[in-house]
Image 1 (tube, helix red, strand yellow):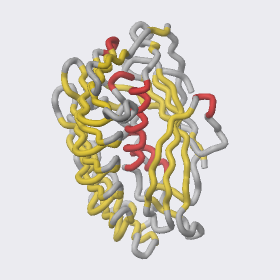
Image 2 (cartoon, rainbow, N blue to C red; image 1 turned 90 degrees about the vertical axis):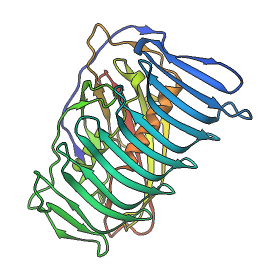
Image 3 (cartoon, rainbow, N blue to C red; image 1 turned 180 degrees about the vertical axis):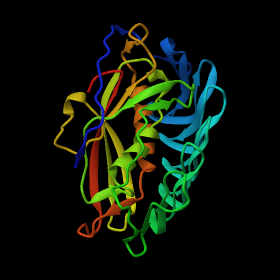
Image 4 (cartoon, rainbow, N blue to C red; image 1 turned 135 degrees about the vertical axis):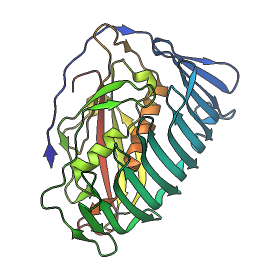
Amino acid sequence: MKNTLLTTFLVLTTAVVFGQKEKINDTTIIANYILVGSSEEYHISPDDENLRHGTYNKKCSDESTVDGSYNKGEKHGTWVSRSSYGDVVKGIQYKNGQPHGKFSLYDFETGPIIKGFFVDGKKDSTWTYYGPNREVIKVGKFDKGKPVGDWVLYKDKKKKPEYVYAYDSTGLIIEPKKPYQAEFDPYLMNPLNGFEYLRLTEESNLPEGITPLGGWEYGLEQFLNNVELPGELWDTLFKGVYTISMSVNQHGAVRAHKVELEAMESFDSNKYYIPYLLLTNGTMANIKNPDHIDNTYISLGDNLLEAFYLMGPWVVDKEFDGWTTVTFQIPVKVNLDF
């Protein structure tokens, strides 16, 4: 299944020196992104310098924007993202590298976007998704990763359900008269600084028989809108290809999310792929072309995986029996053509 919405254009500039990492002591690293006024401080394991261990802090213009901690290379405890004005825009709890506990995502101007709960990396209890006017647009329950009961999609600020899927009986209760259409708004706001940016979509190659509730168009809107762009990528050129894998069964339960970074030339349009294309508010005069350090690639990969966690629940055709692994390529370009 393929869909095409918008195309993009090319911004060219000259490469410059960018992020610099400095080892303060045996276990403390500071990375400075001088061109965008951003920095991060984290700690490494005394036994393995490749493993982050201890507190993590990212700042933008001297204001803390991300706080959390690692335990032997895995995220652990509460992670909080804030806007440059100090407003909390995301809160998520981790245990042993997996989401575990309350999750909340906010727009610092309009209020909540998503509220939910994880248990050992699996969605649990009630999950509620909100529209730009704080209206509920999707709500339902999970039981240890498995969607259960009635999941309801609302539209046009109405309380009447637009789409209801009964997971206990795995059948549609209310089916829309026409395919569910997501409302595409290419202009989004960076929750960290309030600046607008343009999100573009390109052709996607997507599987049939395994879809997010409401269809792929609806699911992609949620995925692409919920990716948190690291501050050091703002007004820079960036490209990379990530792969995200998940295993899903015929009941819509998901396990084994995984993200990896690949070389750009490894992109294969014959595989399933979801492009992530952005134009920030920069102009030809102020967009930089830095050599991004590995920290930036890691941060974006984490954020892509986290946004993928938030998709769903999933609807799987009855022909799929047991667990099926699906892998997506996520080609990312910021201020570049695709």
